[in-house]
Image 1 (spheres, helix red, strand yellow):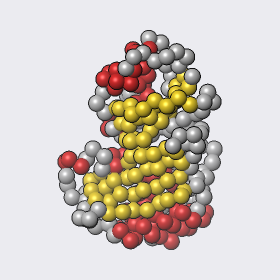
Image 2: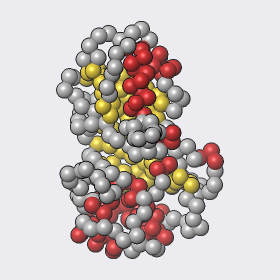
Image 3: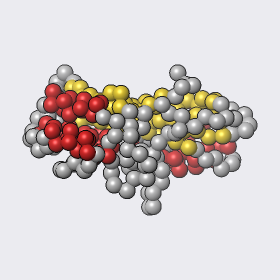
Length: 248
């Protein structure tokens, strides 16, 4: 049988989903505790490879297991896992289901707080600049992306991706009532390495007047490097939702 794990994690203490040299990934921690309960090595495959420090509230991973689970399996697994990783559910799926390749859409948010607040730092980045981002300008920059299908200007170097094509279906900013918290929402069939953090950095620089929107448009037209690009910290980025054709 193949199963999907539905999980969430605070990525602050991890190297991302996968382990890196001298650091631990979320995947390795879950596999270790699955082996403790099931008494067999279990390999899990994630829906993506989040970067170090990135969080997830709606992550999926699949694994195979041929026998019935032990009693209270999910409760026992969550007791063993550290406080920053939680398994919400286990879904039986068809044997060929794949957490990464079957995902049809992924939805992320990037959260920013504009006034210093230690309690907001868990999933939000403090924007420490004197400039107050202008919401309408942020949205002009964000919505420009919906007119394009390739995003080489927003891909970190060294990626092994064969194509820079992505189908964005939403890209917009919202503010809370106080105007002190901003959230960028973006949904696509796939994302390039470092793409969202580079997009957020671009939007902020356009709002600051440090990058002209026409320069962004030209970089996208030519699929060339965007001069003055900025990758914001991982702190504020969360994978919120992954959609599959066979899960409601």
